[in-house]
Image 1 (cartoon, rainbow over the protein chains, first blue to last red):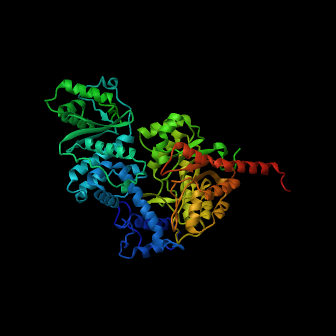
Image 2: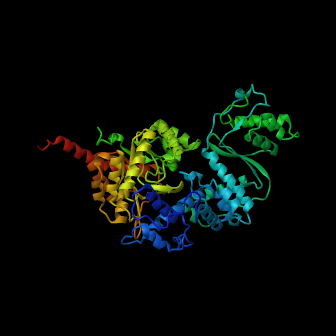
Image 3: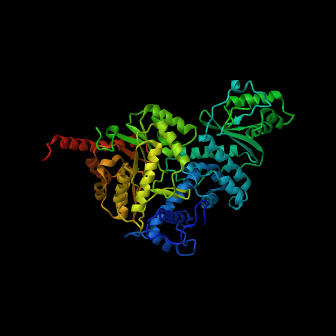
Length: 314
Length: 291
């Protein structure tokens, strides 16, 4: 397995550590051994990249002791690596887990992490590429790939809304003097606009409520990935919805919006002027309605300066 | 008065790790706690609730930052974007010192999110020390490096772990966060005397101490942070402060976290040993010096 970013390991572990290159070679070797997917029995993969027995390769750089072989010592780290990351994905994607069921979700997560190991110092970003992975490898979520992708996008948007950047909110006074044909509004970086073919917002809320009830009802320690029986939440039926995932007063919210309102927001996010964004919504939308939407959005603090400048002032 | 030259916070007392399940209790009840240790990475975010909670904590308590992803021992160079975020947090918390681990955990920008053991070699010590100096100069805050618990050793190692730790901190001219639980865990996993470890590190560089619980398995011990501190670890702690003087001490409890009061009560057990160390220190100072 070749992880993106992680360069191929050396053929053999360095026998001496004299240079930075030696240190890097050793660290590459151990990282490749760690991130290699475990077997179904949570054992180290039996073979190294070049076909040699894994135990033989690990013994090149790790010492055995009087109780454990080199491979067994490395396995402690490898199991810890896999379960730490799997647990983190489980925590951030309860909806996807509920949708696919334990077995399928576990297989998806392992395949995802094998292809896309963490490239960030924080596990907060672990699910950032999960939607991309579901698109690239639909076999892990088939026959529910469409809805799985919608859930994955929705759950990642929640992570962004939870601790994403908030820029200073624009007030009506800030924009009062700028004509709509020149005014460009920024949307808060923590806000995500999602056009979804399934109403997964309701679905994820139902899954979270079920899990919260289950946890409240039991003092048993939650085993996370190994949790057993779960009451099923009905899978959503296909229906187009437009959802804004945002936060208000430090709490997460999902707001369904009208398709025309969504078009306006998308146009603003793309950098269109206010006039062009409103025009994008089509002629059928009443000015009164648009004013009402904007009043609500301003109140929710969704608008901010666009990166680098206030608006269309020149 | 500082207990040693790297320990300007002798009187910092006993802290506990700031953990999510305790937020409500701390913010509502405002219990008396000497200080909180935060995991830096949990607050290296751009906004939202984590920073809001942190600001409320900072209004009431002293906070010390502890990192888990600097990877001083990694062959990768320090990431400037990461350092910028960390520096912003350092300015926010006004942490009097910052700690992270003597380990590695990433290579080529791929992160394992683990604290992996170092090969104990002179070249690795030199490189690690350079990185610590670089980070300290960038962040403009004193740094203590923590010994990790480990389950594997490398063939290429040229010295013991405590010799490596000493080599690194002397070269970097930085402090030590001595984790006595980690020493105990590693001593069982690698068959060495934990007291030899404590005796082998420069006592005048110990700026903070960690205690924690661990779990015994048939063939090894795992550093789980999900239990009260075990007696052998408290004994090692007593020995460490007898050598280094009274030192800012922190209890880590990260899994199966019980109530705030239970965690705090466990941490305050350190006082039993600190009293002894203070008395010994006082007696040492009071006795006439031999000529």
